[in-house]
Length: 216
Image (cartoon, rainbow, N blue to C red):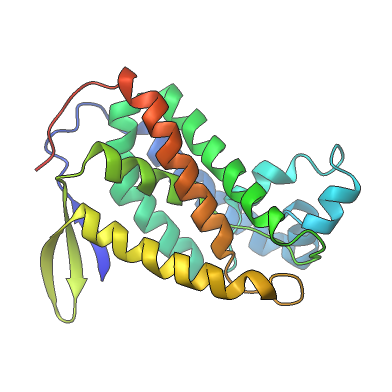
């Protein structure tokens, strides 16, 4: 199921932060393409290198959130951020949303670090932070409907099903990847899971400050 949109009728603000994050990710990707492997090695998060020099490698905790492994990686992440980010930003407000997003990204990176302490493989991508946005969405809009591309048609499904399907895939893939995170590349599933859990927990803390709205 590929999500292609949701109901924005209850949105009360222009999601400036969501748009800015998408633009920044795209811009950073073009810089990454021009910089090549040297740029990736310098600014991606490398667990073994970070543990050897946490202070010197601290900026990569953030720069790695705006890097991607290819066009498909970038496109998929930006699609999810565009669909789900605006609604969450509407509930949290601009400033709180950017803090929330970055905290989810940090939590995702630290979750992946926990299972790949000796890895020298660069970690990059906005997936962990966006997983946090999904965690918030499922709490804030439990009755929300998502338009998904299924086969050759478009159908509406409850948000809990669309996001829940994604969670199950990440969970099973993550469990299978724990023993194989040091020597091979691929998808950082534990970062996805860590980001989602962080988003879920942070939303419990923050949603008391959100404006009550209904999503249909």
